[in-house]
Length: 147
Image 1 (cartoon, rainbow, N blue to C red):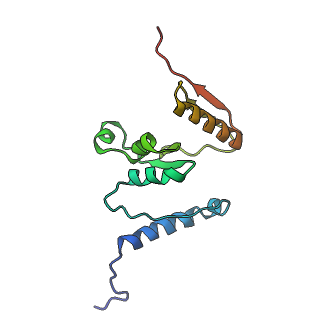
Image 2: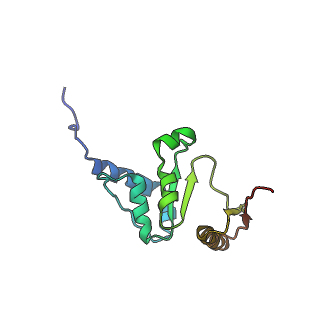
Image 3: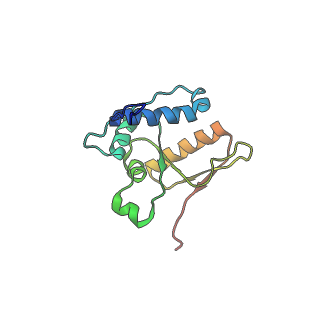
């Protein structure tokens, strides 16, 4: 039996390039409306979270998806989105996989939690800028324990 196409072993770089190409192809319309660059970073002893945190040094925002493992398992395994949110030097948006993105026909709101911390002030400023950009209302939430 003769194979039409010889078997080829793909490198991890080739497989990563294929994943990026597929993602770019699926999102071509949205990508064509903004300036963008795709970067492949080999994880040589570093974690995905560490790589994202370091990329945040020169970023306005880090956006990461959540696989939704959640719960106790995420505490044991460590979570890329959790670590990025906790340690990145810039704001981090964690996008959950459940549900759809907000419809532009039905305006949603941005909810921002605040306290007296510097991080909360930065979060509020970011939320207000995003709300203005997307023309949605902001709900400011401060949770406290009743006395």
